[in-house]
Length: 432
Image (tube, rainbow, N blue to C red; front, top):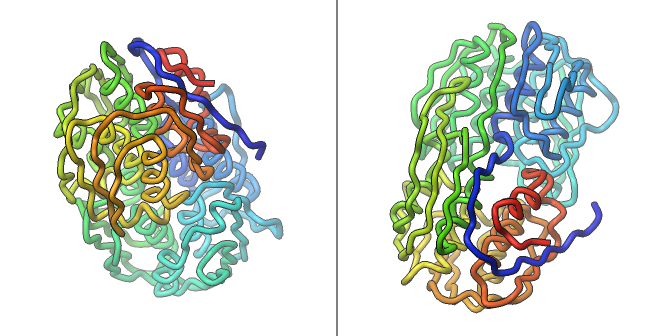
């Protein structure tokens, strides 16, 4: 990937309506379940990002025919639960940790061997948290000391288990549930804290019998998936940058239409409101089993908070944006219980702490969080470490900095938010 650097400059108030891309988590799952369903599924609002396209490409390698009638639209001609065809080629997940971990579960029940590979960043991300519980179900997956590539051995009879996750993770839960489609008996996953239930909701939408409630999900093997239509809501994680931006830039007001409001995803919304943010939800409705609404955000003075740990699992991807809000809030913001951030696309705690310090903000880092002392953001140079969410968060910080913020290594923004530059500049950012 060609290196890309940005400069974010302070500007005026933000205004307009910003339609952010489709939800990445829903797009991944709709593609996978559509591929395994009987019949043709119609996906609208599919995220045209590199991560989700990588998942689509993997399904095509496995023999699934996928049409693209228009941008953001896919017709997935399902092959049924046992219709995938093996390939000797490696299956490239790109930068998509979600793609790789969910595919590990899905492929564990196939009759053929598969090799899952990823880019440099994904190749450093831990996989034992998925491969160990899958092994308890009878799967055989070889790793490189717990890291990708993953070699998934086919032809293994899987059996359902009841498994309590040591660390809450929607990706691990989803991998076990997908393996459970192929397992003998019941598969039950119990979580220490409830995580996102996209997989559960989507399995139900595709007609698979499943019981789930916050912190628990249970299904049995031996059923079938039925093709369906999926309208993918706008991605809350992508909306997060604009929620923070409009909150911290004086005079701003932005509307973000049709954003997914899954309660296991919107911890940042609650955190920002605790800090004094002015965010209204209008036109609440349901789409494809997912709650959706239009978000209207206006500038408001923010104050520091001690973040309730109960919110942490519901905002794990939004912490870089929260750190920027905390950097301009009055007083201290304390985050604890977020050690998971150290094993994302980068060590996000370290990357955000170092970046904010480079812009003049006092940050006291802890193993599982940080204390951020709100103040005035200065111009400066930071490294995004190839992490899309770090890059976009510092683009937001540049809006209220005293000088230009130079952000290095931003090419990976295309993995989750294609068109970010155009949308941002269209509502008032000065980003190039």
